[in-house]
Length: 71
Ligand SMILES: [Zn+2]
Image (cartoon, rainbow, N blue to C red; front, side, top):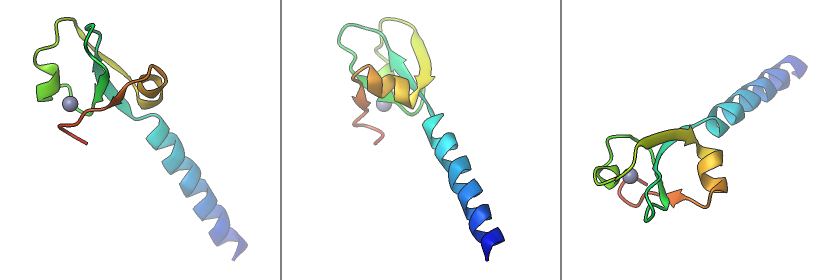
């Protein structure tokens, strides 16, 4: 029983760190306020600057919201 809950604990830690390390794509253009799941998203196609890969947390901390096309 104890072993089983330890395993579940480890698994949830693993899943948590995995999800917090999720990477998203952002455009640094003036009008860009979204983050994108894919660098091939339509929302990035008219990006005037380079496309940057950042962690999901970073994007959220920068005030970015999820892309409406993908999420
Ligand atoms: Zn998008």
